[in-house]
Image: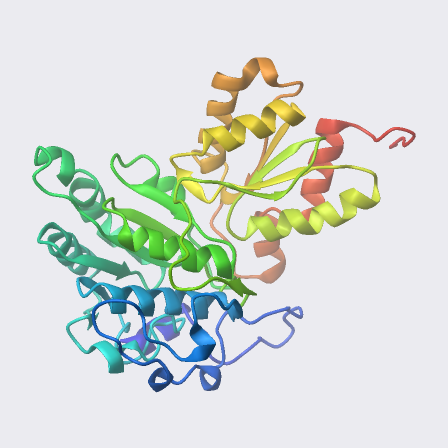
Length: 390
């Protein structure tokens, strides 16, 4: 099963392609660096019983895939109703190793390898959630979940309402998505725009090792269906993570950088693109505020409103398509509710409305780059005092 996905371009174990530009990290971690599953002891019900290096108070640095794996492990150990299902999540450990080694600890029934039938195992996950379990359904690539759109839309999001509150659907739908490195159009989907119109589901996009672990734990504990977006190029981003009991609010945005000149709203990988642009903007004398949305539905309007009222300017940076994207929805909300607080119209920087090319140069041209963010700030804010642009 896994090798059919490799051949289709989902995962490339060969390393960087000849002639490809250098990269700061590889989207797939080397398989020989995985932690030993036996180093995590089983405690049974109640508090976690872990080695001294895994105490709740101790912070440590992990890659994002490791922090997600740790969140899964801790929540499965904490709650016996939590289970994971999807293609190659069990014996193989997931296409990006997020469930590596957990099958040995929890067995076939809690890490269920499924056939390549997304609509089928998504429906199984919905049914499991209705009957009292807390399933996590992994899409090997988020683009494959288009095959499960019927279950996500008509059942996952609506059953609590259509059953008159008799059923709840506490499930998490997660997996890698976004534009990777020359993965081609079908494996470079950004599905947040597809799912945002479904009533009854929440959308969460993670961006760091810390918020990935904390938000996944919160999503698993939530009684609402959560679609959890992980970017394929962020799995090897390193960062400090918190202990087993730390969670984050699923509906809260994060202020990445305080500023006064303009509010730049972004999420997922675009957080890093924006911060690259900020380095140049700081040299030019600008003071932008950067907000990581995290919650794509619902928006954290308290944080968004506070930022816009402070800077009076807004730029939205997304990897999603411009037509019907997250930026379109957020722009509409800002214009409708904060129009009198704006000194400039909201500017959206989005991917081109074209299929993502395989060629590196064309692929890069379809998505937002740091220089586009810099140019947008020049346009919205104007030149800093004492500086004139031609």
